[in-house]
Length: 531
Image (cartoon, rainbow, N blue to C red; front, side):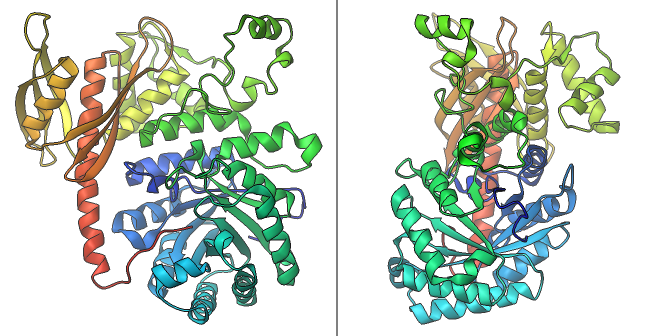
C-alpha cells in the first residue's frame, strides 16, 4: 500500500485475528474468522492482519479463505505475518496471494535482549535476515511491511540501520512496535522523531505504530506516534491481544473522530459499525467487555448520578462528549415476531450485513422460529446473538442434543445429557452437582469421557425484558489447554450446556492444533512471539 494522498489520513490496521487471537483461551475456527473479517470490512478498516500462516494448517486455511472471500464493500488489504525465515514468507504469500490487495508483514527483533537471549545471534545477522526477508517478499508482491520487534527497548541507531535496509529492499510500510508495552508517550515521540532524522527514506513510506497495553498506555502511545508523523495504527477490537492486549481500535478511531477539529487527522472507519463489531468479537472469542470500557462498555453512555441524569436530560452534551448513535448504539428498528416469514427474516439479516439464502436461510429461519415461540419480539441484537450461536454449530466437535435436570432444595440437583459425538453417534451421561448448571457440566464430562475443569462462567442478557435471550460464556481447561464457548437461549440451562460443549470442543481442537504445531517444529525453526 502506498502512502495516502491525504497527509491527514490515518490507516487502520486491524490485528484482531492475529495478535488478538493469541490471547489465552481464544481459538477461532475458519468460519468464525471469516465472520469477523467480513464485519471488519463493513467497519471500514484499511488492513486486516488475518493470521500467522506458518503456525498451523488451520491458520493458513483461515488466512487463505479470508483473502479469497472478504472483498465487500471495499476490498481491504489482507496481510499475513511471517518471520524472516524463507518458509514463513512462502507460506504467507501462498495464503494471501488470492486477495485483491495482499500484503506480507515480516519481522525480526532489534533489541539486544531479544538478539542475545531469544534469537541467540548477532546484530549483523539480524541485518542480513531483514535484508533477505524483505527482498524475498518483494519477489512476490509490492506491498511489504517490516517490523523491528521490541524496537522501543532497542538502540535507536541500530534500529534505524535495520529500517533503512528494509526500505532499500522495497518495504512500503515500516512498523515500530512497543512489543512489551514499556515505553511512555514522550519517549515514543522522541524515538520516532530520531528515526526520521536517521532514516531519510522513512518519509517516503508509511510509518506505523503497534503498541501493547502492559502499562495501560497503548492508546496514548499510539496517539503520540500519530502526532510524531505515523499514519498507520495497528490495533484490535476491544483491545484484545497478547498479555494486557493491544491498542483498542474503537478508542483510537473515536479519539480521532471526536477531536478531529483539534487533531486534524481522519480515518475511513464507519463508526456506526463499532458497537456491532465489538459485540461479535466478544461473542466469538468469549472475552467479555468490561462495563466501564471506553466507547463500547455498557456503562459508557449510562448515567446514575442524579446531577448527571438531570444535566443529560436537559442537554446531552453536559455530560456526553459523544453521541451514542455515532458508535451504533441507537435502538435498531428491526423487530420480528413469531408470525414473521422468511422474507422478513431475510430482509432483517440483510440490514445486518448478512446475505442468507437457500439452506442457510432455512436453518436460520428454523432457529428464529424456535426463539420467536418463546419470545414476544426478536430485535436486531437478538438476531446478532442467534447468528453467532448458529455459527458455533459449524465447529466439528461435540454438540448438546438434549438434557434433563432434576433440581430441589432437599437433594443435590441431578442432570442427564445426550451428546452428539464428532463421529455422529450419541453418548449419554448423568451426574449430580452443586447446582443445576454444575450438574449439567459434570454430566457432559461423563458423556464425553473428558475431565474438563471449569475456569470461568458468565451469564448476560442480550436485551432487556423478562423474555430476554440469555447469553452464557464458559472457559474451561482440559489437559493444560484452555477452551472457550458461548451459548444463547431463553433457557439459561440450555445456553449453559451449549456453551460448555462448545468450550470442550474448542479445547479438544486446540489440543489437536498443538500436536500439529509440535510436529511442524520438528523440521522448522522454533516459533517466536510476534510484535
